[in-house]
Length: 121
Image (cartoon, rainbow, N blue to C red; front, side):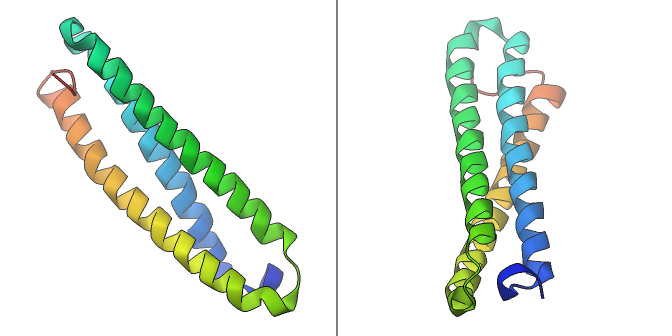
């Protein structure tokens, strides 16, 4: 057992999924902005959408930062059950965010590198 009586496996999965989801969504935003080079006529929509994906990335980062600090701050053993439920929900959220992000990333990579088009347009 680790801090707050939570299992090491849950905490490792939490850290893994948070980092993966942040990297995946940030990569999507970068590819969208970079895809402007494939079609300059669609620059505006790709800039807007790339920035939206960066906002999603920033949200995921802030959520991870605040969630991690919450897990470290609470040391009361009576809060173990509540913290465990919180961690389970966060794991589900970040796992789904990672899976959805990977699906979008695969489509983005296909559009940019294989079709040689801007992602939006």
